[in-house]
Amino acid sequence: MTSKSYVVQMNANGVIDSTVVSVNKGKYPAKVKSRRQRWDVRPSEMANKTCNPIRDIVDGMKLTPNPEKAMIALSIGDPTVFGNLPTDACVLKALKDAVESARYNGYAPSIGYQKSREAVANFYNSSLAPLEAKDVVLTSGCSQAIELCISVLSNPGDNILIPCPGFSLYKTIALSIGVQVKLYNLLPERSWEVDLEHLESLVDEQTTCLVLTNPSNPCGSVFSKEHLEGILKVASKHCLPILADEIYGDMVFPGCTYTSLATLSSDVPILSCGGLAKRWLVPGWRMGWILIHDRRDVFGSEIRKGLVKLTQLILGACTLVQGALESILQNTPQHFYDSTTSFLKANAEICFKELSTVPGLTPIMPSGAMYFMVGIDIDHFPGMKNDVEFTERLVTEQSVFCLPTSVNIAFLFPQLIH
Image (cartoon, rainbow, N blue to C red; front, side, top):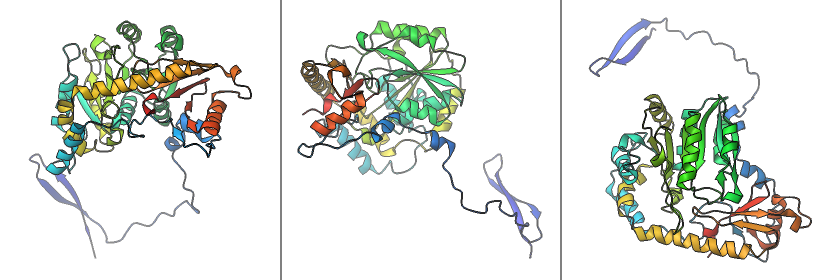
């Protein structure tokens, strides 16, 4: 018995052409003996390198809540936890309509539907930072947007600059792919502005990206236009692209002003990451985006092509939410945004007022986002060595769980106070 081998390929007209290329002897090649004599299945190097520093700290803590008090967990930035910050009815209707239309049950292009990308571009477009659909990549949440940006800009052995205190995910993503992190300081005495001198001192030949979070997680700070211009000056001097984590963009308290970084940049290319999660109060819907701002075409076509290739790893964001996106962005009423930020500010003011009366605690009033940083003078708390032990005692005695940062600063979530 003989068998034939075929090569199946497309010709120039897109027609499948099958060609017989060889006839074998009808026998399988001799089997090569396996070198494995026993089971030895191990996790990959990437898996071993993946580590969330917050989880490392929390998992090592001794957390035994007071059985007489209900647990209040303030350790995750999820505005839906207690049900006191629901999304707007227009947002829910948009998703319901998308489901009932039955038009979004299949695969979308990995970077998102053209119409959905146009909706995001139109929503964020401005004369100072123009956007088109080609400048938008839809992702599975802002977290994936951040991952794609770090991955497209950096190789193993490179380093990126991230804020301290800062969102732990930046480090988790970078280290998992062999990219090192350098922490630049934020200054609590200056409402968490970047220490520009320290930032610049960290730049070297292997630095591929500056990560900037504004408004800040976990500090709640909102940078002024002048301070953002100072950051751009450093980036321009050292030819550093910026990953701008702006998931809390415009989610600032009444009386404060938010400026998108891209509106101030004339030469520094910026990958701005955002999404529905926080401003629209639907983190579980996993809809994020990357906005590509590159006035001088520094990225050329290669970075854009790289982002497209990376999106193909999971074949894009949820199609149902993409189908609802245009309606969400066009029809969500302004009073919903205003009500949310006013509520956050009111609770932040309560936190600030009450914590200011506690000897040894120094709260820093935020200007936006959903987080609150509290300095701890550990000398005022006998028997405690650091912020981790302070947090453990807070859980044990009061059943209130905040996150330590291991720099004698803890942070709370004022949005979760009823």
